[in-house]
Image (tube, rainbow over all chains, first blue to last red; front, top):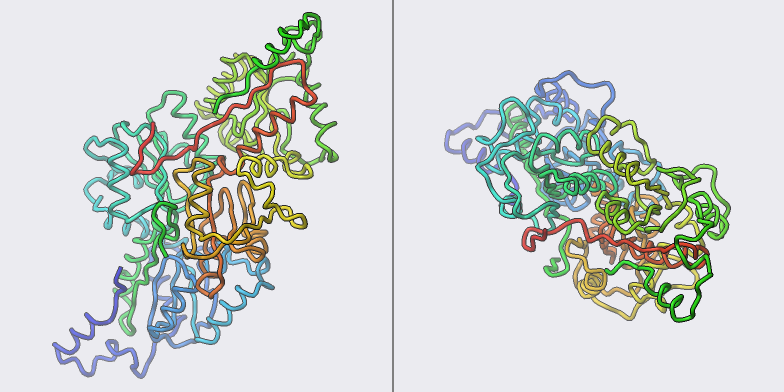
Length: 295
Length: 295
């Protein structure tokens, strides 16, 4: 996917002759700081900021002047390198930076790779903001909004139940193939009778535990998740099918199941952060399968 | 896979004319009980029985006379039905019965499917023994022993490091293809350069967390796991590769990554439980992929 760039804004500025509009020029005299961007996120996300949250500044200081913002699904070293190369020194990431949802450092504190990543962030003068809980907590869920848009499911969304979508009857295999094609997934995994008619799908982007997986499954023909444990929800779905329930499970992969939601986040940010360029940095599906190796 | 049956034993009994050997006939006068089987497992597993363990009798009573034993990777409803149909009323399972490693019932206590499974077990007079910790704790690990045998990796095992295997140099894509073929996996997922030369593999059967995933990865070219979190170890492996480390990750799927270890468990049990038939009940890979639907 092509990252968003400032080209459209620069083009507009040029074509409209906006020479003095400070907010258009990243190098303006009154640069926005990391803390100010976070404050604007808090002011615009539409829900009260939680006391207990993983949405914290993981690296860098609030006073750091922002040159540009990279929005991403997961702050991998690759994404950080690409952000730094594009002079985007604030990274807003949905998933963890240091391999821990709670951003716990102790387990990896002595690990050379952790230290290398930490030092890269410091040496390049980057700040990293973890933006997970409140983007999901937004009404509607920001991740869901982006995924629905990318899948073209706006008209299928159930007005009563946020995660529920209704479709003209489609066989499970074709339904899964359609999602794999739209999201460009090579390693999707599916459970269920390929001929099962799908009319109702519950979509839980990201990781899903047994609970609320069980009540989600009850509301639909197919449950769609990013990631889930084989010894919990996967076993449950298998048992439901054995018991005669007409059910199925589609496992997309975690990153792919949420990434479009961060693409939308980049656009949302542009509504109230106009001083600096904002780019969405996408990542490919992490995996390949043995019959289709990929570098 | 064909389940083990009593045919060999019956054949032996017939050919040797053993009419009175009680231990050969499942319907002998002094039937072995569930508690006695568990006691023999404890006596034979070769390590002290832990105070804190998931290896408990999940359903049924110790006094229940055993008619036959089904050994399985995961006590799905399908496996329980097959066991009951074969008159195997003690099920020994590596993975949970009620979708919880700790066998916690409360989350699903009001769920109709849980109740249906529980009632099936009760109505069919089954007992279920969870056999996880001590089978792994056995020296060598019983799961590893079975997997190594099925993969034909006995000669590749490193004598110093239990999970390490060394191979003649093989490209990652071919190495992965070989494993997928031997274990009959359709939904294997791989990370790494397909051309990466593989000489050393660390294999961690089942679920693997970030720790000890990090030190395992450090010891080999490729880390092989059953299941792991995308936002922890998968991100770490991606970062290691970005940082220039020559590393790879192969994710087999949880059930497939351990199942042969329970096939071996069934054979091990036969060494000291001879009164009743013992069958290994295998399960297929739970998933299919959209381009190869499977009922």
